Image (cartoon, rainbow, N blue to C red; front, top):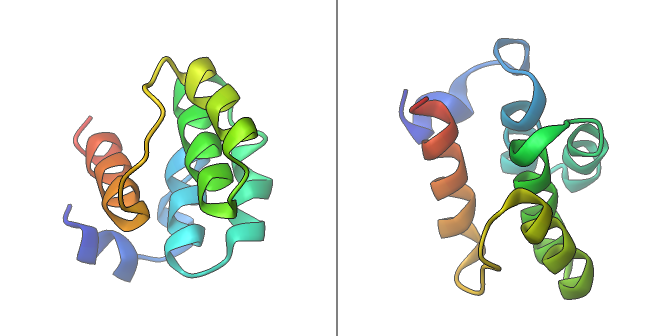
Length: 91
Protein backbone atom coordinates (compact mmCIF):
# COMPACT_ATOMS: atom_id res chain seq x y z
CA UNK A 1 0.00 0.00 0.00
CA UNK A 2 1.32 3.44 -0.89
CA UNK A 3 1.05 6.56 1.25
CA UNK A 4 -1.64 7.83 -1.13
CA UNK A 5 -3.63 4.60 -0.80
CA UNK A 6 -3.20 4.73 2.98
CA UNK A 7 -4.64 8.24 3.14
CA UNK A 8 -7.47 7.41 0.70
CA UNK A 9 -8.53 4.37 2.74
CA UNK A 10 -11.16 4.68 5.44
CA UNK A 11 -10.22 4.77 9.10
CA UNK A 12 -12.00 1.44 9.64
CA UNK A 13 -9.19 -0.32 7.75
CA UNK A 14 -6.65 0.47 10.48
CA UNK A 15 -6.10 0.15 14.18
CA UNK A 16 -3.48 1.03 16.74
CA UNK A 17 -0.44 2.99 15.63
CA UNK A 18 -1.50 3.08 11.97
CA UNK A 19 -4.91 4.46 12.91
CA UNK A 20 -3.24 7.20 14.93
CA UNK A 21 -1.02 8.05 11.96
CA UNK A 22 -4.05 8.04 9.65
CA UNK A 23 -5.84 10.58 11.86
CA UNK A 24 -2.72 12.72 12.06
CA UNK A 25 -2.48 12.62 8.28
CA UNK A 26 -6.05 13.88 8.14
CA UNK A 27 -5.10 16.83 10.34
CA UNK A 28 -6.50 15.59 13.64
CA UNK A 29 -3.55 15.67 16.05
CA UNK A 30 -5.87 15.36 19.07
CA UNK A 31 -7.56 12.19 17.79
CA UNK A 32 -4.18 10.75 16.77
CA UNK A 33 -2.74 11.45 20.22
CA UNK A 34 -5.77 9.98 21.97
CA UNK A 35 -5.31 6.74 20.02
CA UNK A 36 -1.51 6.65 20.35
CA UNK A 37 -1.76 6.90 24.14
CA UNK A 38 -3.57 3.55 24.18
CA UNK A 39 -1.18 1.68 21.86
CA UNK A 40 1.29 -0.43 23.80
CA UNK A 41 4.73 -1.44 22.63
CA UNK A 42 7.36 0.24 20.55
CA UNK A 43 5.06 1.20 17.66
CA UNK A 44 2.77 3.13 19.97
CA UNK A 45 5.74 4.79 21.62
CA UNK A 46 7.21 5.77 18.25
CA UNK A 47 3.98 7.37 17.04
CA UNK A 48 3.56 9.03 20.43
CA UNK A 49 7.10 10.44 20.12
CA UNK A 50 6.43 11.78 16.63
CA UNK A 51 3.19 13.43 17.79
CA UNK A 52 4.87 15.17 20.72
CA UNK A 53 7.68 16.36 18.44
CA UNK A 54 5.04 17.73 16.08
CA UNK A 55 3.40 19.43 19.04
CA UNK A 56 6.73 21.06 19.89
CA UNK A 57 7.24 19.20 23.18
CA UNK A 58 10.81 18.00 22.61
CA UNK A 59 11.30 16.73 26.16
CA UNK A 60 8.24 14.51 26.07
CA UNK A 61 9.08 13.41 22.53
CA UNK A 62 12.58 12.38 23.64
CA UNK A 63 11.10 10.23 26.40
CA UNK A 64 8.84 8.42 23.91
CA UNK A 65 11.64 7.95 21.36
CA UNK A 66 13.65 6.22 24.09
CA UNK A 67 10.65 4.03 24.99
CA UNK A 68 10.35 3.13 21.30
CA UNK A 69 14.06 2.27 21.06
CA UNK A 70 14.48 4.94 18.36
CA UNK A 71 16.87 7.81 17.84
CA UNK A 72 15.31 11.20 18.47
CA UNK A 73 14.24 12.65 15.13
CA UNK A 74 15.13 16.21 14.17
CA UNK A 75 14.31 16.46 10.47
CA UNK A 76 11.22 17.26 8.48
CA UNK A 77 8.02 16.14 10.23
CA UNK A 78 6.29 15.10 7.01
CA UNK A 79 9.27 12.94 6.06
CA UNK A 80 9.23 11.29 9.49
CA UNK A 81 5.48 10.65 9.30
CA UNK A 82 5.92 9.04 5.87
CA UNK A 83 8.85 6.92 7.08
CA UNK A 84 6.83 5.62 10.05
CA UNK A 85 3.82 4.84 7.87
CA UNK A 86 5.93 3.08 5.25
CA UNK A 87 7.73 0.93 7.81
CA UNK A 88 4.50 -0.10 9.51
CA UNK A 89 2.71 -0.80 6.22
CA UNK A 90 5.63 -2.89 4.96
CA UNK A 91 5.38 -5.36 7.82
